[in-house]
Amino acid sequence: MKFLDQLGDAVKDVKELAKSKASVVKDLTADAAQEVKVLAKEKAKDVKAKSADAAQEVKVLVKEKAADVKAKSADAAHDVNELVKAKSADVAKDLEASLKEKAEELKQKAREVKDITADAAKDITETVKEKSAGAAKDIRAKVAEKTDTKGKAEEPTEDVTTECEEKTE
Image (cartoon, rainbow, N blue to C red; front, top):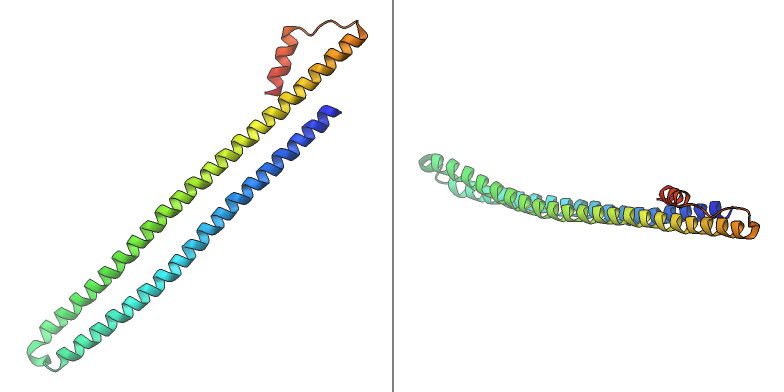
C-alpha cells in the first residue's frame, strides 16, 4: 500500500507541476495577445492620423492648385496622386516595420513558451523517474527485509533486480 501511496503522491506532484507550468504558459500567451491588441490599436490610430494628415495636405494642395486650374490642371492631378502615393507608402512602411518588430517579439515569446514547456516536460519526467526509483528501492528493501526475517526466501537474483529496475524506468 505504501508503494501505491507513493505512486499516488508522485502523480499528484506531477499534476501540480504540470498545472503550474501550464499557468506560466497561459500567462505568457495572454500577455503576448494583449501586447498584440495594444499594438494594433496604436498602429490603427497612427494610420488614421497619418491618413487624416495626408488628406488634409491633399486638400490644401488641391485648393492651392484650384486657382490656376485651367493652366495647371494636369500638373495638379499628378502632384496630388504622387503625394497620396508617397504618404500611403510612408504609412505602409511604418506599419510594416512595426508589425515585423512585433512578429519578432512574438516569435521570441513563442520560443520562451516552447522552452518553458520543454523544461516542464523534463521536470515531470525527472520527477516521475525519481519517484519510481524511490518506490523501487523501498520495494527492494521490503522484499529483502521480509526475506531476512523469514529466513526461507532466497536472495533476489540479478534477473529479478534488473527486471524491477527496467519496470521503474
